[in-house]
Image 1 (tube, rainbow, N blue to C red):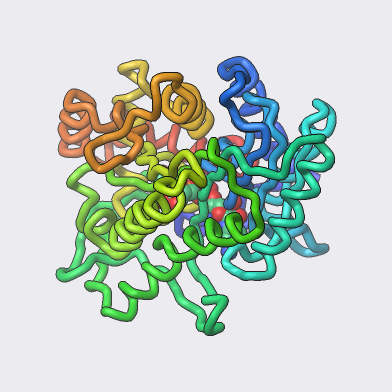
Image 2 (cartoon, rainbow, N blue to C red):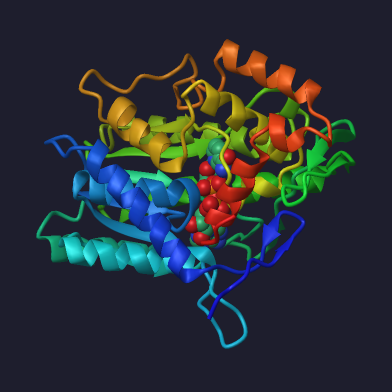
Length: 387
Ligand code: NAD
């Protein structure tokens, strides 16, 4: 049966299993061709948020680039009689099948990563994966790549919601409908204090700290272990809604958590370190719903493709592994100890060209001047469809 994409407001409600499988295979090929295992690369990796976008690319790099056993945690829907599964469900399925064919151990756990129950299941899965691979149950790589709209605090049972809103002043910005290229103005009232603290609860660093504490308690950490959590900074044009908005506040908290983890674990030689990695703006299921981002990314892709600098999730994470985390000379980081994978996106010449382009695009020339088609294709591809 041919499945057609069902899209509402830059959200896709279904997925195409064959297309999802093809995407995973494509990324596996890239990782195999661009990474090479060494004594320092991980043998056992935990990826929280493993089924799509940056987390999936991270798992693929660990497994197929370095031959690492992986435990992946994600929250995906299985297909039912009426609905297809979510893309991540099919991505996990293909990943596990391919890993098994290649003799690489993989265990995928489906459930709420914020819960104590799933953290304990993850610990069990790590021990099982180590046993299956014939290695010590010690995590060499831990990637935290969650993007979620809600979180239930495991201690209190309170449900928190994350919102994408400005802080302090209303926001108004140009946004684009990727399906037909029409522009509209996205408006958002400033977040309330509760909305800010709710977003920090969901997308901030508290849960990451709970994961680290669990790994320590269960004896799963080792001195060589490296960890990374992902963030985005982006250009000034997006700051009101992103970096200086509710999500940015949550990401500040993620950075706080990494500093705390480094004090608690790295300084005690329990792990090699945790870094916040600032990644490039890309089209994933999460990023398409942030106002301004689809318009900015459509222009960014055009400029970066023209300059031969364009990357997708797998290219970014390959660079994270090869040129940052597992560089013999140590992990290069900025003055705030963050890994910068957004270095090409934020280059002066790239940003200047993007700003110029954004100022010159009209509804009449949007399909010619920008890469809105590339945005749309990547969005459809993330759900297993072609444009
Ligand atoms: P994504 O939507 O593609 O993937 C999110 C993952 O989180 C999925 O595996 C999903 O199953 C999982 N997840 C969500 N809620 C969960 C829960 N309760 N329990 C278990 N798993 C859950 O997202 P993405 O765009 O790859 O984002 C991943 C991270 O990268 C985020 O922290 C995001 O801020 C960051 N980032 C994204 C971009 C971008 O442009 N997409 C850029 C820089 C940084």
